[in-house]
Length: 393
Image 1: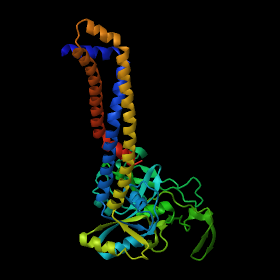
Image 2: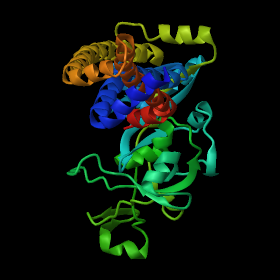
Image 3: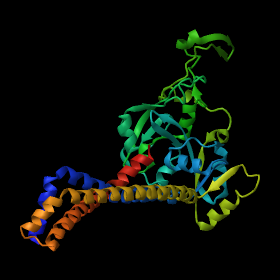
Image 4: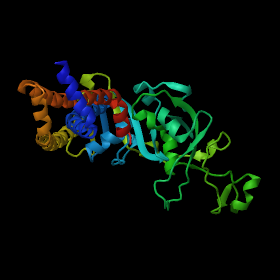
C-alpha cells in the first residue's frame, strides 16, 4: 500500500499545476455553498438578536421595514416622521416606558441619534471614558464612531448638511464629545448620540442669537423702539453651544410638536404590551405599532429564499465543474496509456495499477475537502465580525 501512495503522490507532485487547479476547483465547489450558509445564518442571528431585545416600535404609518431598520440599525432611509407627542402619549398610558428616537442626520458617515438617557439604560451601554450628555450641544460616541471620526472626550464632531445645496441655511453644529462607549458590536458602536433637543438644533428648529442689547452687537441693529430691538440679516446663528451662549437658544411652541422618527416602547409586562398594541388597531389610527421580530423574520424569509436560489445555482455550476474534473481525469488516463502499460510490464498487477490511479483521485478530493473544511472553520470564526461590518454599512 505504501508503494501505491508513493507513486500517486509523486505523480501529483510532478504535475503540480494540474493538481492545484483540480484541488482548487473541487474545494470551491464544496466551500462556497457551506460558507454562504454560515454567513446567512450568522446574519440572521445578528439581525434577530437586536430585534428580540426591542419589544415594540411605534412610528408614523409607512414601511414597517424602513421603520425597524432605521430604529434598530440606524441604516435605512428616514421613515415617515411623527412628533414628540407620540412619546408623551405612550408614557401617559403607564403601560410602557417611552424612549423617543430621532435618526435623520449624520456626522460625516456616522448616524446622529437623538434620544433620551433612558436609551443608555435600555441598551445597557457602558462608558469606556467620560460621561453622559447633560447639556445642549454635547454628544456621546460609540466606540467605532470615535475611531472613524478620530474624536474622543474633550474633542468635537460636526454635523453634516443633509444635502450639498442647503437652501434652508442651517449651519452645521459643532458638538462637544463628553463620552465614548465601550464596544457592544451592534449598531450603537457606529452612532453619535445626542439629546433630542440637540438633534432639533442640528435641524435648525432651535436656534440662538446674539444679545442685541450688548454694545458689540450694535452693527447688527436696525432700530430701537423702547425695549424692542429690530436686527438686520447680519445676526449670527450660533454653530457651537457654549456656557456663554446656551441661554440664547430657545424653543418656539410646544416640544410635543417637534419631530421624531420613532418611539421604542418597553412594556412593563406582557399584558401591558398587549393592551398597548390594541390601542393602535383603530382603522383611523395614523400611527403603527410593530414587533421588530415580526418584521425581521419576514426580511429573513426573503433572504433565505434568495439564498436557496443562489445555492441551487452554485450546485449546478458545481456539477458542471465536477463533470469537467471527471473529463480531465478520463483524458489523463488516455494520455497516460503508455505509462500504465509500463507499470504492467515491470510487474504491476491490474489491481495495483488501478489502486495508483484511484489513490490519485482520492488524494485530490481529500485535499480539497480538508482545505474547504479549514476555510469553513475560518469563515465561522470570523463570520460575526464580517456580518457586523456588512450590516452596519
